[in-house]
Image 1 (tube, rainbow, N blue to C red):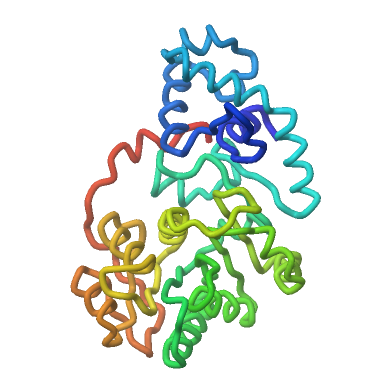
Image 2: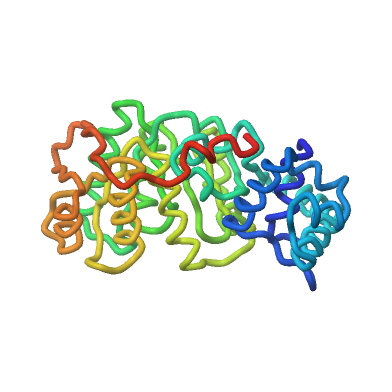
Length: 316
């Protein structure tokens, strides 16, 4: 682990959080990283800086400088915890690492997470993927459409990226692996729990499954994190297929409408008369049917993402 990665993990990880220790959230880290850049510093330089240095060189107030020092002081115990996770097959990657998801940096810029916990082959991030999103509760027709769409995607050498949840996510991932492709999952709950499954471990060891999460590996489900991870799925994808969405509610609806607004990738939507699906198509999602041939239409013009170009080089 290089010093920059070590510092980012130390600043942002929620492992070893004790009294008086409050890790930087993604937005806070991005703002602080910009101050470091402006001062000609890198995250690793913090290990050699005093509280006074941080105040003066980072233009920080007393409370924030003290917070940074408290975070840095926990580095030894944090490294011990990371070693324990590594023995379980869980590693950490930061925005300072070359293998960090490049698509997220490009499309989400400063809003991409400072760190990901992961299990699996990061090389899969360099392969093209189609996202699959949809309801946890599904009917046979939803399953049939999902499997057919995955078969088409795999035939065109795409892998699958999803949130790893029950329902459409799981069906798509399993189908991709059964067809000798791969699955990338951006989780919103416990990675440790998933790794208790021997089937999951086998898929990881065979290089067919990569799991990533912004939350510490023993964390439970969090609605806010689940909503946030939707954007990682879309940013990772060449295009994403919405199989089934509720109308005006739920994570699938929120993620799809956000992607239509920001244009991280083309939003494809099954042209089935579910109210949510029909509304997404009216909002600009591209309708596809049971005979979808894998064609991905050109991305439609959307709102400009502010500061996208400026943020690309933050501690790459």
